[in-house]
Amino acid sequence: MKRRIAVFLLACALVPGLSAERFEHKFRPGEKYRFLSTVEEDIFINRKLSHRAQIANRISFEVPEAFPDGSGLLRGEFTTSTRVKGLEAFVEDQRYESEYRLSRNGIYDIAPRYYMPVVRNVPTFPDRDLAPGDTWAAPGEERHDFRGDYGIPDPFVIPFTASYTYVGPETRDGTDLRVIRVSYTIFHRPPEPLIHDGVFPTQIAGWSEQTLYWDPLRGGLHSYEERFQFVLELSNGTTAEFRGKAASRMLEAPPLDRDALARELREATKGMENVTVQTGDEGVTITIENVQFEADSARLLPSEIEKIARIAEILKSYPARDILVEGHTALAGTAAGRRQLSVERAAAVADRIVRLGARSADRIIVRGWGAERPIDTNSTEAGRSRNRRVEITVLEN
Image (tube, rainbow, N blue to C red; front, side, top):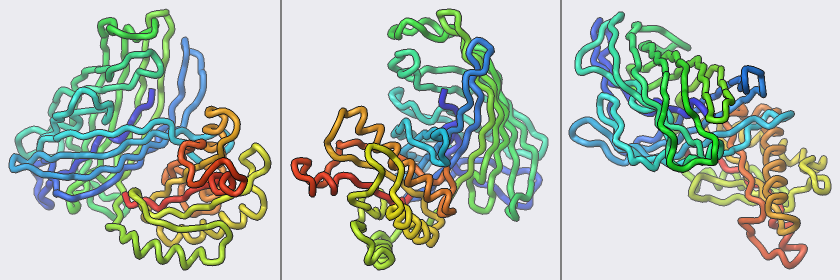
C-alpha cells in the first residue's frame, strides 16, 4: 500500500491576529507548487514483519483556473518512489496524473478514473469562524490503486469520518503558523469486486492521526505530520498490516527562465567530454552521452565519478529546484534487462549526487527507460554509445 501521497494540495485564507478565523481554500490562477513527502512503514504479513519500506512522494501542481464560488481547478502529477537497498536514492515506481475541482470548503469534484490524491475531502472546513479549541467532523475517503496487488481495475474506495480540532497558532522555523489536528478510524467491509485476481480485501481497519501546519501569510500548507496503522484482511485468510509515519512539506520556486539557465549550464559544463545541455518540457537537461560503467553493471568508472562530481557542484547553485535523473541504454539484451540496467545506472548517478551534498534524496526522481528513447541509431557502435546515456534535468516545478 503506497500511503500518504500528498493529500493536502490547497491554500487557506486566514486573518492574522484574531482569536476566531475563517478557514477557506483560496486559489490563484497560474499558481504552481509542489509537495515532498517521505514515508517510513513496516509491513507485516500474518503478524510477522515482512519488510520495511522508505517511500518518497513528489506532487507538482498548477492552478489553471479559479472560479467565482471560491473553488479552483487543480492539475498535476504524482510520483511515488522507493529507496533502493544500499543506495541513498529513491527510484520511481509509479506516476499518476490527476485533475479535479476543489471547493473553498475542501470538497472534491473529481472523475472516478483518477487514483490520486489518495485521501480526499481532508481537510473539510465548516462555514464559520474557528477559534482555538473548536472541533468539527466531516466525511472523507481514501482511494487506493490495487491493480498490481489484487487485479482490481478501479480505484478502491474506503469511506471514513474525520474529526478535527483547531489547536491554535504556533511558530515553527521562524514562521507564524496555525495548527489543525485531524484523525479518523476505518472499519470497512467492502463488497467483492466485480473483477479481481482471486484474492481481494474483505475488511480494512485502522487509524490515521495527522497534524497540519498552515502558513497564514502565504495562505497555504507549510507542512504536515502523520502516524498511521492499517490492517487488510484478504479473502484467502492472509492479513497485511501497515504501520508507519509520514511527513510532508511544500516547496516553492520562482518561475524558471529556461533559456537563461541553459546558457549558464552550458558555460559551467564547457570542456566536459560528451556533455550537452538543452531545454525541454520539464526543465533544462544535462545529458552525459556514452556514460562509462563497468561492463553490464551500474558501477561508475573513475572518469565518470569525477564528471558527476563536477556536475553536482554545478547543481548546488540551484538549490530550489528538484532534479530528475533518467537512465538510457543501447538496444542489447532483453527489454526487461535493459530497463533494469537503466534504472540501476540512473540510481547510481543520483546516489552520487546525494552523497556529494547537491540534493537530499527526496529531492531527486530516478527513472529508467531502457532503450525506449534512442537519440541515434542502434546499428552502429557510435550510435549505441550516444544512446548509452544519463540525463540530469533541473525541473521547473
